[in-house]
Each structure stands twice: as structure tokens, then as C-alpha cells.
Length: 151
Image (cartoon, rainbow, N blue to C red; front, side, top):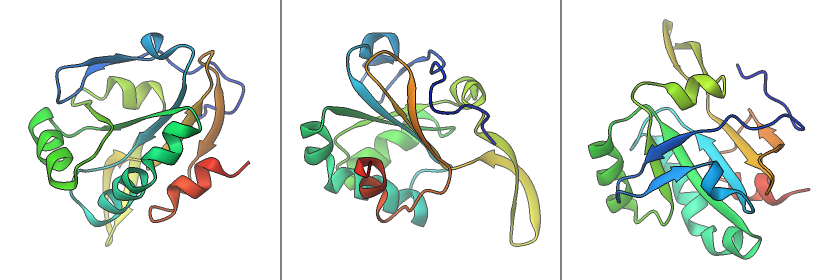
């Protein structure tokens, strides 16, 4: 579980999205960022979260946010997921888990009695200066935008 909290400097990252764009926190300076980490493309919870952010993307943009999703899935899976659900924001593949580790969202999990290592669904709201404003560890996948926009 992450130890990052509001007021901390957000760890820098850089990765290429499925459209060939290099996305880095440094290049987003001056913008508010919703950086959300999710376990796996095209699973029920991850799809609900992505679609909620998609359906409310214009409101997030109007409020000045850039949305970026990160998972350990490879580029090809992100391409299919983005196309299938017409996602208007970037998904970054982090197969080496460098961004995931930097944000402290990788660790032991349990599902149906089995233990494994995986991504903790977590969202960081980062201000224009690269400082963490909010951390969501209890993500409501179907109402995530409302969580983010709520003061």
C-alpha cells in the first residue's frame, strides 16, 4: 500500500502511450493530473472505472484535469482496451512496474483464497506543481469521477 500522501511530491515518470505519445509528469507541469492505477485491462472493475472516467471526461477537462491510467498490461492490451471502450485519455503500459513501484501500489493481495502480488487500485490527484493533492485507496469504480471532483 502506498505511503505517499497529500503534500508529497509526486514521483516523476515517463512512458509511451498506445498512440506513441511520450507522457511524463514533467511535461504535464502546469496541469492538474488524475493518475489512476488499475490491475488489468478489460476486467469488470477496471472497465467500470475507465468508462466512468470516459463518460465524465469532458467535465474533468473543464475542471482542468488530464487523466492518465497505468497498469502492468502490455501496450497491445492497452491498444485493444482503448479502442474497445473509446477511451479519450492515455493508458500507460508499465510492464516493468517502475511507475507502479514508485507510487507504492504493488504488493500482496488475496482473491478467492489465493495470494498473489498485484496492483492496488489507487488514484492520485496531482496539482500543477507536481504535488499530490489527494490519494484515493478506496476507489468507487462506478462513481470515481464524483470522488475526484468532490472537495
